[in-house]
Image (cartoon, rainbow, N blue to C red; front, side, top):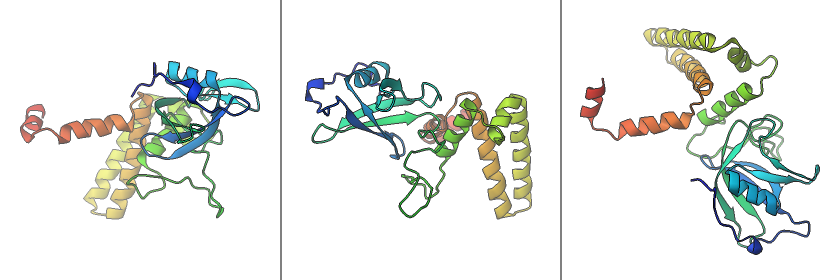
Length: 227
C-alpha cells in the first residue's frame, strides 16, 4: 500500500503540550516492533507526502527522516491510531536495520539480560532469512572494517559469484556423502551467499517468495512449457 496522498484529519490527533505524538514503528511483514520515536504535525505530513517515515528529534530539535544518513529508510505501508488518538503506529518496510547500534530493532535487550531481538511469525529461529538479508543490506550501505560481507561487496560481483559456486559445489559434495549435517551446513552457506548477490542487485527475499508463489499456483503443464 502507498500512503502518499492519505488524508489525515490533524485536528483529531491529540498532540501533547509540545506538539508531539509518540509513534511506534512495526515491521509490516514480521510484526516485529522496531522502534519508538516522536512526530509533530510537520513530520506526519512529510511522512504522508513522501511515503517514508519522518520524525521530530527532541534532542536535536529538528525534523529528520529515518535513514537520511544511514540509508536505513522506512517505507510506510500503513498508519494507525490508538483508541485515544494520542499514539500512532507505522507499519513499515525496513531497509537494513532500525537501531543505530546495528541491531534489527531497538528493543533487543530483555529484562533477563539477554540481548536477542524478539521474532514474530512462523519461524522459530532467532534469525529469519529476512533478518539476515537486512543485516547484509546494512553491511552494503554502511561498510564496516573487518566485516566479511562488506569485504565481499568491496571485492565486487565476480568474487561474490565465485563464493556461490564454491558453496554450491560443497553442498553437492555433502549430498553425495549422504551426510545430513553437512548438507544443512553447506546449504546455509549457499543461501547466505545467494542473499548477498540478491542484495547486490537490489532484489529482496520477498521477490523470491512472490516468484515461488506464482509458480506454485501454476498447473504442471506450465512448468513443462517453460523448461
